[in-house]
Image 1 (cartoon, helix red, strand yellow):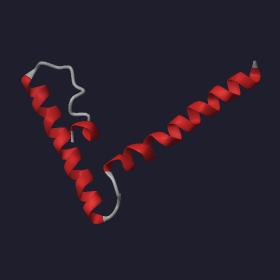
Image 2 (cartoon, rainbow, N blue to C red):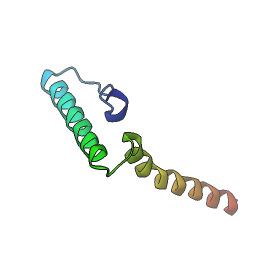
Image 3 (cartoon, one colour):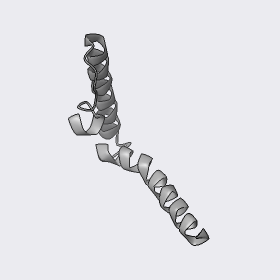
Image 4 (cartoon, rainbow, N blue to C red):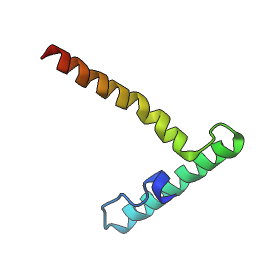
Length: 70
């Protein structure tokens, strides 16, 4: 859960903010697990990969286009 929901990446010291972050991470984990059990996804990392792959491809294409203009 720590790696999938980024529960370790918060830099606050306020008790309410910490509790909100932990609750949100647990909720995200439960949603991912429900989707996995229902067969909507095979692995938790699939959602993250599908979210970022188009972004990475777009960034690379932009860089290549800039290099072509030089």
